[in-house]
Image (tube, rainbow, N blue to C red; front, side, top):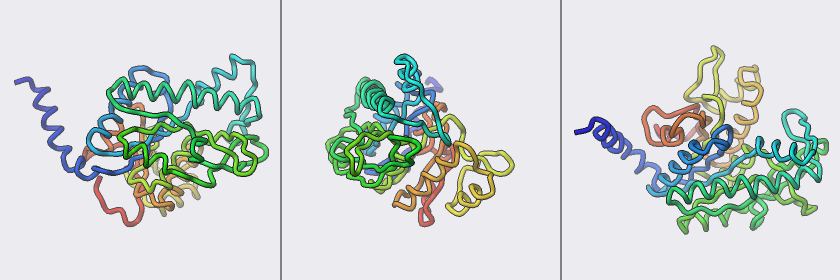
Amino acid sequence: MNRDWIATAKTLSQALPYLQRYAGAVVVIKFGGNAMGDADAMAEFARDVVLMKQVGMHPVIIHGGGPMINDMLERLGITSSFVRGKRVTDQATVEVVEMVLTGLVNKRIVQAIMDQGGRAVGLSGKDDDLMVAEADDPELGFVGQPKHMNVQVLHDLNNAGIIPVVAPVATGENDGETYNVNGDTAAGAIAGALRADRLLLLTDVPGVKGPDGTVLTQLSLEQVREFIADGTIAGGMIPKTETALAAIEAGVRAVVILDGRLPNASLLELFTDHGAGSIIRAEDDETSA
């Protein structure tokens, strides 16, 4: 008997408690980083998501697309700048952002999921008023902060056996304009509105590092606040952990920040004892998974 087959069967058997644990659970996944530009990594991610749906979970995908936006802006000769890590988005830039995110990137992910045998529908925060935003900062132009969420369309798609793939573009609360929303922020807002069981933030780093530089596998809300205050959590990890705090306060049971470059990262986190990345839990979440 082939040892690989035996190992595969054993792994499936060991995953049973987790499959039972997450049956019917809503899991929101922020997909971005290097994996989006790699065909093999995209196919692997899509296969993982289809597996989740097949075993009774309800995955909801929110994606970014910064490198693709940068490439298109450069090709069109549109200069883009950043303030405090956020893209200054004028009228010309927001039109490119919407075109790239809702067109090129969104449909590429939808197609990848369908290629793996799943059903997927692409939409943006503008569809059915899923995400209504207000201006984040006048200095940033058309950059939005989610204010009102209407996630019924996501429930409808989940119940129909369809995986929603959401581009982080929103409608303005008062002016009807289009707003570019940070992908992590959008994922947190959607997860909170869905009261998701898990929010997975796939990044290009292994997780949240502690004072000694090692990755912390588990953190409480209080630890996250302390590490932000004392500078242990710094740079690009600040908005991710702040998103985690806001999502948990809105009703998400736990948020995991993990390395999306790791093969089958989402499955490792959800269906194994080892897990992956750093999990930030609600105080009343006592599950081991």
